Amino acid sequence: MGRRFESSSLDEHQIEELENLLKSEGLPSLIDSFGNRTELPKPIFEMLSDIVQHVKQGHSIFMISEDETFTTQAAANFLVVSRQHLVDLLEKGEIDFHYVGTHRRVYFRDLKKYADKRDRKRKETLDELFDKVTDTGKYNASYQGDDS
Image 1: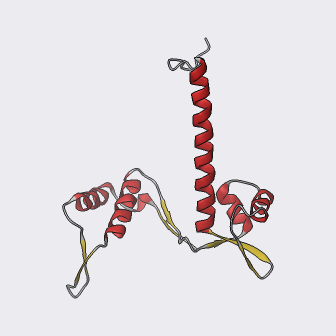
Image 2: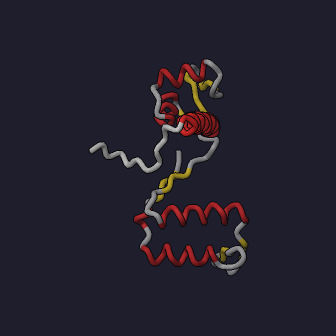
Image 3: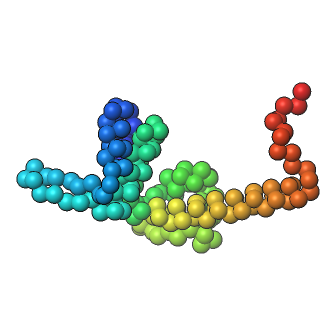
């Protein structure tokens, strides 16, 4: 399925060396055992830079292909919804899916597309709500949540 990398598998010195290398001018190159040199393509360089930053922050990394397929239960788990709710979304056409035999399967790219759209819609709704509260003058930016 995917590949997991634990940030704890590198020590701080190794992470710093990688970070410094990736901050240097130009794109780094890979050199094989025969001395053949290949410059890292920019998209791979940018992804590697992102990985190093996440590892530096102590995050674990899990890489998965966008073409990876999920069962309905795994897809529901990814979206943090019930399996039945996910099936309803599939049947309504909100998320693309295909069948493998009689079983529904969902590509990761389609789950991500739906999750991004859902999250954008949630943020827009919260922003609108915040604007309404602010416009009424009921928002107190200095309120710290201490009712005492």
